[in-house]
Image (cartoon, rainbow, N blue to C red; front, side):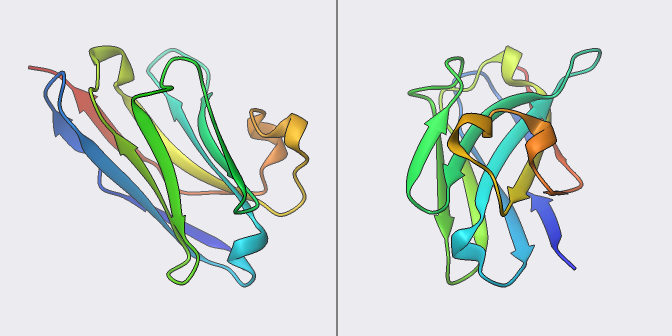
Length: 125
């Protein structure tokens, strides 16, 4: 059974940095597409970034140039480094894993099979 554990959220000032992590208990981690999504109060869950089968990375326009997704296939962990954060980045951040995603579906939360419990990120002075 696949388990994802999100961690690393917290309070950060605008313009600051934070890194969130997701540890996966899954075999063949390297072959999984790993994604980060976020959900703010009263809003739908939205795509943030994805690492497609350990090859290429993709980002939402709102975070491109500020956020970086990376993965350690030995530790079965995926990271989201958030730099120059803004108040509108405040949300619960969730990692997700999918073993059968095609590239065209990486931004669709319904395409992922497994989810972490989420970690709160609050950007405020």
